[in-house]
Amino acid sequence: MKTIVLLFFSSIVLIFAADELLSVNMVIRHADRAATSGWATPQSPQILFRGNGELTDLGIDNAFDQGRDFQQRYVMSGFIDKRFLPSEVYLRSSAVNRCLMSAAAFGAGLFQQTSKSHSIVPPIFTKEQSADGLLVPLLTCGDGWADVISRLNLSSNRNVQAAALTTMLTTQWPAACAGVPPSLIDAIIAEAPNPLINMPANYKECAEGPAKEFMYKAR
Image (tube, rainbow, N blue to C red; front, top):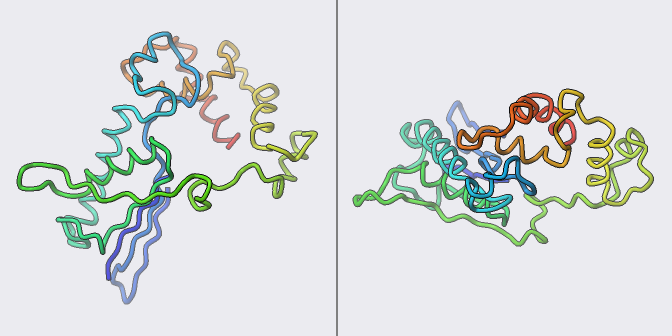
């Protein structure tokens, strides 16, 4: 049986047998969202009207377009049925709005429409965050953080991820971002691609270079 399994939380695992593609497993991060906290400009809350942490219209469009790209590769090629068969496609998402909406938009782009031009959206399976060890791993455990604790000279092994980020923001904030409050790092990175948001030039310059590099390093 040919299958596609999508996990929305990017890599693709392909399974072949005798040069025949049998299964595809994909892990896809959510699409463009608003910052989980804070805003880069006073106008940002009106433009990103769904609120902090929520998927934006740009994110919906991008997730749909990604679904269309995968349609060309896996549906139009005949690997899976263009009408959507539940036996062929399984979508699972963490129980977070931006991930669920990304999965829905991707699914809508993946398949052709009905005879009345309505989108076919595959069911999206999820679990409560507290029970989802696959897509919402526990990061508060003190085990496995010894190198981070040592490198940043942290005083405790409790909530290491949050403590490490706080320490890095105060000790390793890029000099090129000196005019940007470190607390806005998520906001400026999230809002920089949005053409409707006119953030200060130094914010945008920081977001598109040093801040993004810093955030990936912190993660």
